[in-house]
Amino acid sequence: MIWNETKECMSRDEMSSLQSKRLVKMVDYVYHNVEFYRKKMQSMGLLPSDIKGIEDLNKLPFTTKDDLRDNYPFGLFAVPQSEIVRVHASSGTTGKATVVGYTRKDLDVWAECVARCFTMAGVTRNDIMQIAYGYGLFTGGLGAHDGAQKIGATVVPMSTGNSQKLITMMVDFGVTALACTPSYLLHISEILEQQGLLDKIKLRTAVCGAEPWTDEMRKELEKRLHITAHDIYGLSEVMGPGVACDCEYHNGLHVNEDHFLPEVLDSKTFKPVKEGELGELVFTTLTKEGLPLLRYRTKDITSMYTSPCPCGRTNVRIGKFKGRVDDMLIIRGVNVFPSQVEVALIGIPEVKPYYMIIVDRVNNLDTLEIQIEVDEKYYMDEIKGIETLTKKVAHVINQALGLNAKITIVQPNTLKRSDGKAVHVIDHRKLF
Amino acid sequence: MISKQLSVFVENRKGRLEEVLNVLKENGINILSLSLADTTEYGLLRLIVNDCNKGKEALTKSGFSTLLSDILIIKISNISGSLDETLKVLSKNDISVEYMYGLSVDGTKASIVIKTNDILKTDGIFTANKIETIGIEEI
Image 1 (cartoon, one colour):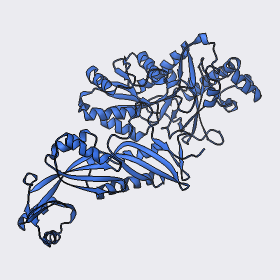
Image 2 (cartoon, rainbow over the protein chains, first blue to last red):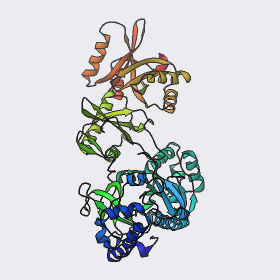
Image 3 (cartoon, each protein chain N blue to C red):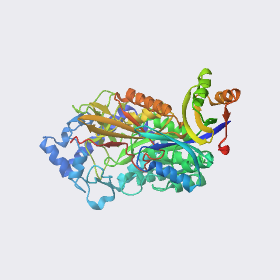
């Protein structure tokens, strides 16, 4: 099923011409309504009329999270406060919260985009859908809620924090669709397993987002729960969840590029990378009224594909995220993404898919420790067996990262399961 | 006669061992013998208790990794050389000992817990060689 065939299946040429038309209008709009962009463009000697289409995109200035923070709270809004009908704010883990604002039309577009994504995941009006993202300042809860409601699904606004209630209702209501973070879904699947409820649920699809996860983890979740799981992507600065999502072919995430113009750029030269190569994902909003952004640097590392997808959608796809620019650890000179550790661990049946990476520096040498939990089924009472297992894990990690890691087995259920964004890294080094 | 041993994975942290023992106490489990194998990272506590199933259940509920494994309890003469004799029988039959620890000394007899690479075969060898094995309830 495709929610909006006109917009999701148009030819590449039609899309480019629609994007060009919208970009020209957007640049003119921000120039005349946002002082920050007007000043920036003036300092670069750039006039709105210099932008004639998407081929001129590289002339435009970038926007970063710092720009949003510097203009806290409403400095980058392009409309008077009376036109703003809702604000959200990011979690603020990296400093002051960044505030985003939406006009009534922005909320309509958002719901439309989420509806497209959920439809990709197979959600229809016949589904009962639990939304288990936090409701509130975080865009996840209300964003997903509006999209599910637009489709006409029966929405159960769970929010986060009460897994037992979620599970009870999942069983009692016959819930068929769920939106939450992938780590929370893993947590839920574990409780269902413990309580022997896996065959009592009717869940058939899950749309997971808000944190990067791997294809291996998706397959693991699909196998455990007998569902299909989909990756929904978004960020509050650009809109919230619903910027992109993967369809049943899991060929990458289809971008709603009639609203958000994506680029994947080399992290040093800021030139577009070749199709399929890794770079930083950058978005220019094409229709946003409240908080329009030019070339917003997401810090997310991915690749982009324009090849046709068997599902029939023609919009570009972004690959699975390889982490964030600022999530990357450099250990003994080696670039490490926590997701690599996850992929490696999922391949080892004796080990649970939870982990904690602890990085430290002892005598000027980086140390890497990975804490893991052993699956109950594989528990053993001989030191020999445990040593063999830790050696095996160390070997797999070494193959994946090119680094030696100390593997520590911790007691079951001690590694953090998270309701929101899972924390996988503790870095004790003082590098800055 | 094959018996069950309860083993517990204990993180090498202050107070963890005490927590294990406390769970057993709260559940009225009596420890007949124990052995603690330690490494720098963790310890393995091996226990012979009066009710291993109840002990396992209680410890698992409290968040510990536990396992019941098959072991043999042999009763041999409390004189020099008797253990040597016993082990010779095993090595002659190509059985290797994984670990063992003392259980009790009772006058002329000593009981020892023994774990080998093939418990079933070992049990047969003991029977054939008239080496006495006992059950936990006989301790």
